Length: 111
Image 1: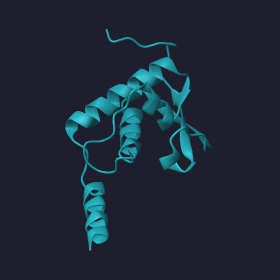
Image 2: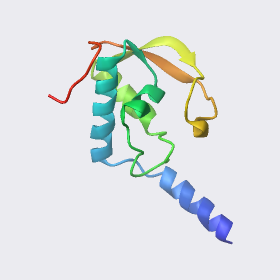
Image 3: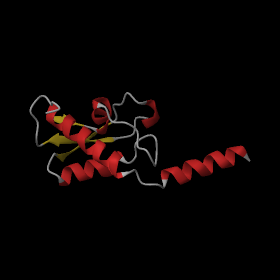
Image 4: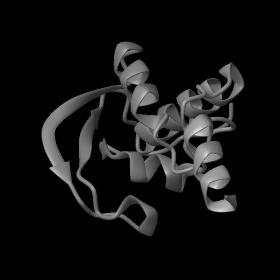
């Protein structure tokens, strides 16, 4: 029964949306990444300092909607290309969209 309880908890957790605080954090990490890189993927956002969502999947599946919100905010746009490169084994080399930064400066700072 313990395996079933663990599976049920994981399903329930993945069905909860992340908090507004995490959404703001993700938005800022995407902005910083877009300032620093001319093209980016979700992997680059993780490397910038994204923390795992406080609800939902710990693998960061909530980052997809956050990337779409960053597109709406004018930070990024899709290039039409994907990559399977990843340093995170939990992503199993799944395809990731490559985004073009619309705010690229080659750096970011906290000011």
